[in-house]
Length: 214
Image (tube, helix red, strand yellow):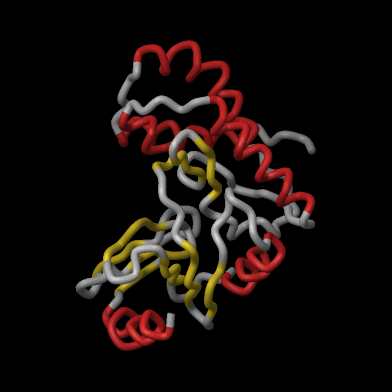
C-alpha cells in the first residue's frame, strides 16, 4: 500500500487533469499519466488504477466537487459486505478503494448481456443492509451497480448520506421486470450508448417535471 500511495503523490496527482463541467454530468478527464489507467467517471470524481496494483482503485474528486468526507463516512458505516467495496486509505482529495470487478447494468444493456434476477435481488439486499447501517441509498442507477458472475454489486455509495427521497432504483427495477425480462432479454438486444443516454436524459426530465410524493 505504501508504494501505491507514493505513486499517487509522485506520478498521478501532479499530471492528472480532471474537471467538473456541470454538477449533474460526469467529470471530464483530460489527461492521465502513464502507466495509470482510467476506469470510469462519475458526477464527483474519476476512478483510476495502476497496472501494478490491479486490485485497488483510486477515486479522485474533481476540484470544487464536495463529498469526499461524506463518502468516507459511508464506507465506515458499511464495514464489510460482499456487495460493497471497502475504503483502504483516505486523504483530502482521494480515496483508495478495494476494486470490484464486473460489468455495469448500463453496459450490460449495451452489450446485450443477460441480467439474471439474482443480480437484482443481491442489490436489493445490499441496499437493505445499508439502510440498516443508518444510510439512505440514493442515486442507485444502471451505471452505479454491476454484475459479476451472476451476482449484483453496488459500486457508488457517495450519495448514501442524502436523506431526500430517491426512486431511481425502484424505477430501474420496474423497467427490469416490465420491459427487460419480457422484451429485451429474450431478444438479447444491444442498445447503442446514444440511445441509453437519451433514455437517461428523458428520465431525469420526467422526474423533474413529475415529482413523486414521498
